[in-house]
Each structure stands twice: as C-alpha cells, then as structure tokens.
Length: 204
Image (cartoon, rainbow, N blue to C red):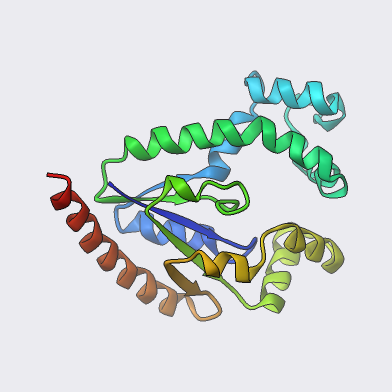
C-alpha cells in the first residue's frame, strides 16, 4: 500500500487538496479529524487535557474550548509540548491503523504537523502544499477571524517552508485557480496509481 503524506502550512489549502483526492476515490486519513475525535467529551485524551490545563479550557457544555486552548499553547511552549505528548501518540496510532485498513489503490495521510511531529516515517512519499506568504496570512485571518499579528504567530510556530519543501517528494504551489489545482491533483493521482501498482507488484 502506497501511503502519501499530505502536509503544508496552515491555510495553504490542505483540506481542498484532500477533498480532490477523495473525489477521485482515494481514502484520506485526516489527522485533524482524528484529533477532534480524541478530545470529544468522555474520551481519555480530554480527561488528560483537563488534568493538565484545568477545566478552564472547557466550554459550558463540557466540550473543549479550542480557541482558549490555542491561546494557551501558543503563549507557552511547555504547554504546547504537554498537549502534544497527550495527543500525538494516539494520533500516530490511529493513522497507522486507518491507513493499514485502507481499501483504495493508495491512501493520503493528511497531517499538518507531519514533519514537526516526526511522523514522516509513516508514509512512502511526502506531498507538500505551498502558498505565497502574504496570501497565506490573508486566508488565515479571514478563515479564523483573527488579527494579522495572531496569524503571524501561528505561522511562525510551524516548520518553515524551506523545512517542508526539503523533505518533499512532490510539491503543489497553491496560488492559482481551482481549475489549475484540479489539473495538478489529477496528474499526481495518475502518478500515485502507477507507483502503487509498482509497489504491489514488488510485494508479490
């Protein structure tokens, strides 16, 4: 099974690219979705987060206050490490299980922190989505309704564009129209199908 790690900076268009691969019939295992499921009320990870950060990071309905938690971890590197120590092992475990159970010709593991969390070993190839820095900040401010300074802080906390691209096998520059993005994804899809077939033959 060919496993392609999809990553990129925040607001670079990872969700859009994932959806395009999904439309082509490819299983997409989304680390963000796994993370959201892990912190639902009643889950062990949420209990550990409460023990670590207190009930102040909960909404009145008992759900995790993501905005509050985000502010805590971006202002305190130690808190960020504590949260990652709770979530990353469980996310990694689910990525392995779900990708091993994939039934499509190859699968996409969409992991925003693929490089930072040292999860690159889970995949055969790395596909990086890149975007112009100014456009990235603009999209992030609009998407999350935050100030430019807050957006800059979030971007800086991630790995740099150079770090990501240095590990990439394939790169999509997502500054163009949706039509051009479709063409690029379809081209990569054909490439991955060929690679998946090669891997399958080699394993026989």
